[in-house]
Image 1 (cartoon, rainbow, N blue to C red):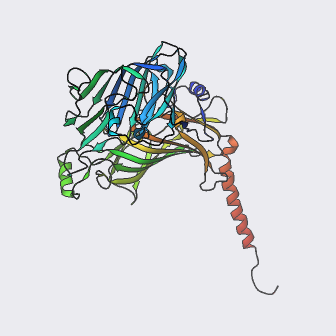
Image 2 (tube, rainbow, N blue to C red):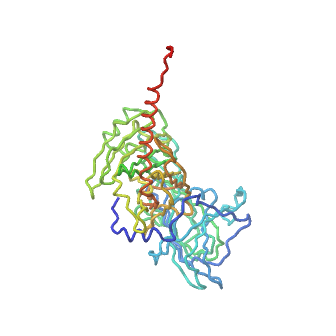
Image 3 (spheres, rainbow, N blue to C red):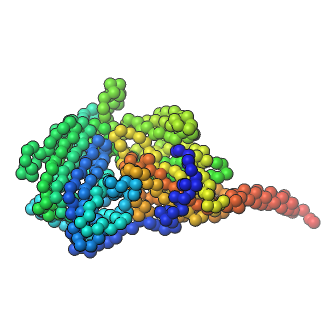
Length: 517
């Protein structure tokens, strides 16, 4: 973590209106009537979708030129997703491609209250798919006949299916991904195309279209396949054309069903203690036969690619100390720690599980370490009793095949007596993998531990469907903590010890003998 370069500038940012009060849940979802259809007030002049399959999850980026075709200024743009995909969308963010300094646009999840329909065979190419929506709120209404270029990025978790579902221990692994040649949109689209990026040139199966454009479709160039461009001005919004691709991915498909991350702040000890608890599984192809230790040793000796998790490399910030790696059995000694060199060189914690994690296998463990609190905590310039804590939202292991998180729970445990807690997700000029604050659940509670009177103030943030791209995102927590609050623990310990000595003195002076007085 880099130290703050200008405390006053940061504090000015922190106490702006973008701070979120964390006294209640901030996540919400608006319900829409069953017959809801977005009004045709926009037109997509040109749309380019990029699908990246280089990692164990799908990353999509849609660049679209949007024009207001209504007679009134408009500020709400709807993004549809099929109902079976809607719950897999993570890290959705929208920006103005020509004005990135404006930051992310506000995005809100809305839900159409209608039962899922069973599509008939004739509906596969029709506009009757059951969709749910995200609504994008423009910071300024778009004037009639005006255009804006939107950059929409998101991840799709658990969308890759291994084919075949079971393979030999040393066999290559193949994944399939299905999508529509036409990017789902709530509005008419004039022209569009889709580019698919594969991890290698080994793509044995892919759909070729017929009658959508002149020439071959898709066009292949190295590891990239391009579907389109298509002239879709006369197609109704929601029209689809199913595409399926199957490609080699002899790497683990790492999925964390749950990540619990605790950050405990100690003013007296000047320490920031971090602990992360993982529940991992490999979503790749399962083993066709029983596991062979001999074959696994041979694979490692020859350094052949494998669909199993061999090790997890976890970079630590410069100055991190006392790392540990514990699973359900106990301490795992098959790990290696390389300390960093402050202020620049990172440390490295190489985690090697007790056994290789093949497709369908699970592994749970926890790791932790300590950091100097002064690296992350500063006093706010607005008041002597106000503090600013800047920490990563998640850190996570760094592997080339990537990792996806179905649910992440971050708990920031502040000192006893901390109050007026607020937080903010820092936004960069590019995607940071985190959704907007409206999609992050937050609440304040008490965390009681030894010698507490009121309990530590704990901020809990919960978010679903994250990818490893969020590992560089940061949150800033501000809170008030006075000098007298800091004396609460010493007073409690002193009072406790005094009470014990007084009780011992009283008991020692009691006459419990039965002799005659």
